[in-house]
Each structure stands twice: as structure tokens, then as C-alpha cells.
Image (cartoon, rainbow over all chains, first blue to last red; front, side):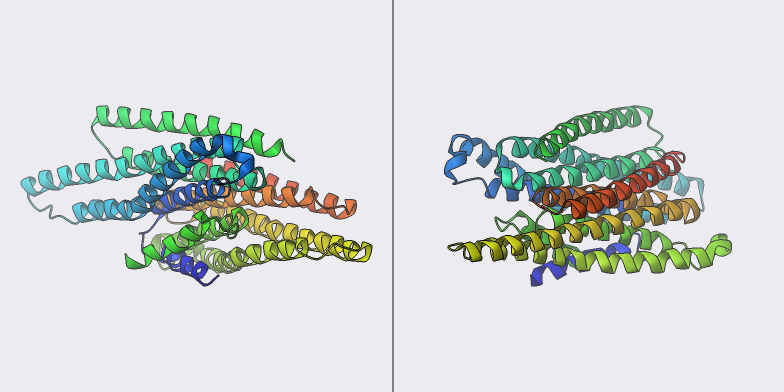
Length: 207
Length: 207
């Protein structure tokens, strides 16, 4: 049980007065935890006689969940880095008109990157929810609640990531970029909500 | 940024085929992360001129958030231990009628404990949401999204914990215990949902 305590380090960093890691990193972390729970249920399903018929599908879910977990774990760091890029842009000199132009462009570029990072987190979380739906339907019924919790965590990560996208979009001038990125968040949210609703039905139907 | 990687150890444990840590521990972990984000926003508020008027209130929020974070971090472990107690009860001998009676009583006692642990997680998560509501209303507006994410994470922890309570209640014979515990989950869920709705309004009103 020792390794559980290592979690405290990340949460300590979250609680500190340093703005990073913040909500964007937390969104990716909770999505990665959701993917991990989907992977756990898949591992509690493979190799069991009762589930032999769905073995190939469960193996696919497991691989996909592990790919998403790795990507979301990387996004924990990437979100903090994207925030750092924006902060650096704000610290650029702004004494002359030319400096102001350079600084404004750097801020816009930083904000676009800082929008796309949580957008990727949101999309990955929506995929975790889709996998959770498969695992609560076809996986080990004794671990169904764990798969459901995986969907709940990924859904929190999805919503949190979208809030981070939207707050950054509010500082971006490029209307085309804003429209395209906003549309992508709407799509991810709708897919994630529909998936979570189906997971809820599957989990609560057992109680 | 090194310490962020320590998170991987917990998430690795979550993903493993070992049933613990599972959904109950993940619920407490995500609640602790929500409390940490509330604490971060409080720390980004105290000592700033603009927020001098609310300083005593913010200090109180900070202390309460840190207390809840410590409790939820302990519940990550306690949930895994409670699960272990139930598993141990199921492994008791059941050859004679007397052994069967002893085993059944041990299972019931283990299940009750394994219901009360996630109930405490659920109640602590509901308190984190109430603190998040205060911090997004009175705290540093530049970190409002982070406070909102804190509420989202705590709400996921709340729902996940309640699922864990309910799945255990379904194996408990004591009708009075089941009724009382179920009523407590309904109360925590209602308070948490109402708080999250108000946080959503506060966060999205800024965009």
C-alpha cells in the first residue's frame, strides 16, 4: 500500500500557491485515473472462462484504455507547460509599438496552444467514457461499479477540460479558431454525456 | 515538475488486476484533489489587497479545505482496507453450521464497515463542493475556473462514493442500517448537486 502515498506529492503540488499544476492538469489526471479503472476491469475479465466469448473485444478495450491513460498522463505535464508559455508571453517587454505587436502575437499563440491542450484532454476523456460503457456492458460484472466510477471520473475530466478550453478561448481574437475549437468541445461534451447516461443505466440496473 | 510523475504510481496501482485500490479509493482520491484545488485558489487569494475584506473567511476556507484533503487522503487507504476485511470474511471456513454463522456475521460486519467508509468519502466530497462554492464566489477571480474544477472533481468523488455505498448496501440484511445509510447518501447527493449547480453558474457567468 506504500505506493498510494506517492499520490500525495501530486495533490500537494495541486494545493500549493503555484498556479501549476492547476485545473487543466487535474482534468487530465482524473481522466487518466478513469482510464486506469477501465483497464483494471478489463484485466479482471481477460482469461476467465465466463468471458471467453468476448476475450478479443476486452483485449482491445484494455489496449485502448492503456493508450489513453498514457496520453492523459502526458497531458498532465503538457497542460502545465502550455500555461507556462502564456505566462512567458505576458512577461515580454511592451515599451515600444513593435514590442507590443510581438508580445500580443506571442500571447495569442500561447493562448491557442493552451486551448488545444485541454481540448485534447476533453476528447481523450470522451473516449475513456466510451470504453467504460463497453466494459460495464461486457466485462466482469463483479467489477461493474469500478467501470462506472471510471466513467464518472472521465466525465469530470471532460467537463473540467472544457472549462479550461473556454476560459482560454475568451482571450483569443481569431474568430475562426474560436468557432472551430468551441464546436469540438460541444461535440466531446455531448458524446461524453450520452455515454455516461448509458453507463449509469448499466450500473444502477444491477442494484 | 518531477513530483508530478509520482502520481503514476497510484494510477498504475489503480490499473492493475489487483481489485484494490479500486473505485472507492479513486473516489476519495478525486475528492482530495478537489479539496487541493480549493486550497490552491484560497492561497492565491490570501494576502492580496483586493481581497483584504474577505481575508478571515478565505483563511477559514483554506483550513477547512486542508482538513478535508487530509481526511480524504486517509480514506483512499481506508477504503482499500475495508475491502480487505470483506474479502477476509468471505475466506472464513464454512464447513459446519457454526462456522457458517460466524462467517455470515463477519461478512455482514465487513459489509457495514465497507459501506460507512465510502459514505464518509461522499459526505467529505459534499463539504468540498460547499467550500468550492465559497471560493469561486469570494476568492481570486483569475483562478475561478480552478475552484470550479475543484467542485467538479469533488462531485465525481461524491457520486462514485455513493455508488460504492449502494453496491455494498445491496448485500446487507439489517434493514434499519440500510435505510439510515441510504438516506445519508441521498442527503449528500442533493447537497452536492445543488452546490455544483451554483458553482457552474458562478464559473460560466464569467465567460
